[in-house]
Length: 616
Picture 1: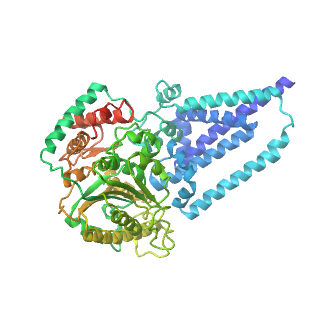
Picture 2: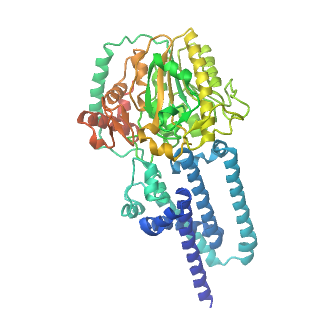
Picture 3: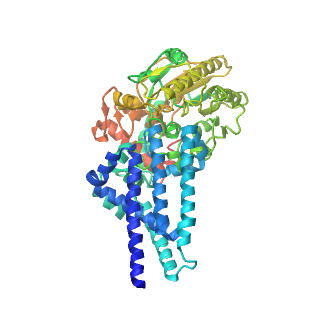
């Protein structure tokens, strides 16, 4: 009889585990596909049944851990389903705000939970908190009055042993699953038989293969896959090639002492909404910006992300490292490659070697995207943030973020108190999502966005940015010291609805404006679309600075491939977008191979280039 009861317990434990794992997977997909029951059903039963079952198997391992930990199959299954609901809800909201799914590395951001809640808006945050608290109360009541009371006061020794073994075994399996992207992983091998990984577009990767498969494919991996022919001699050959180019270029450069202050301003969500087909408004929020760019160097960059990804854009600009050569799992270098950055080249390190004082300014939380560590590793002398800035005013009492005007005042405070020339890198916050709760009243009526409340308030933010920019340029013009400003937008806002996404080509959804302005030199030209990593090239060009072999490589790459992105490429003197390295001409292909070898050497390889002084 006792044996029958034991078999019965095992059977119940197994049934609950299978049901909760399948249900958890379905819930995640249902939320991920935006409450589309039919799509989630087809994924489970028709189009990707094998992949769905593999994902359920992964979740079953977590069920083993939870049921072993709590000593209850019911509680283990309930917690698993609850966690699935939470993860599904998070990825749904991220998709709505930034048009991309949840990545494994973003669990680091849980320490910034209050700030993340503020970004999505008070109403949505309150709704999510209410759901979470309700689930916690349910679990507490369930455990206390059902699970606990149904158990004997003493736990049989055999059950304790089984729970320990189950816990240890499941932890080992979870550790092994966590190495999904490492060579010879058997779990990935099983997936490879049934999925087609879309490495160049993670939104499509998740959508095509399901959330669980997409999530697994973005687990930790080496930053780059080893390129063909990587060796010390290959890096030495590349060094010699671009050292010679740099020497030839430097013959015509003065290399005189520098006294020009260099300002980078990456303006949060700054974009020209009228570039989008279907967007209209009763007035223009960027009147002053349009006047400024009439008489200076201007163009567009192709941002790495839509609706977010500020830190990724910033990483490209500061290091010159494009995202394209990285492994597909690298979606947020600031979080995933923090410690390695001490070895990366950067604009700050380069200008520091030229006697510049280097300062980063971000009027928000210092730990967001690990900027406190990243900026130090990239060579900044000082980091000013919301807790140590002098100027922290906002555009209105209801506005959540420090204004552009305050950030610009902070810049000039730094310059006026410096004896050395300054390099100041500012990442603004004023225009950050969400928008509609920032203002009691707005002066815009925007049509065609699919989200009029957000769009109206966003246009109001843009107008305030535009006014602050006009004042900033005037202050630069009147300043006693020479200043070179590079200004750009990091990405488009993520609130645009389906019609905007459908009626505009993909490239347009990633284009943001940039301009370069000097109070000493006339700059009047228009640049076609470029990648953010090339912005620093204009410093050495305009200020006549002698270049390093690395800078020579960046210039050669820009000359052949103005746009290099995981989604698309653009060759020189062409308007035709290409979507694979295989489509590139021979010269562009070779330079990109050189560049990728160098990136691999620094990020993953043996750093032979450091010994060669490639960056000096």
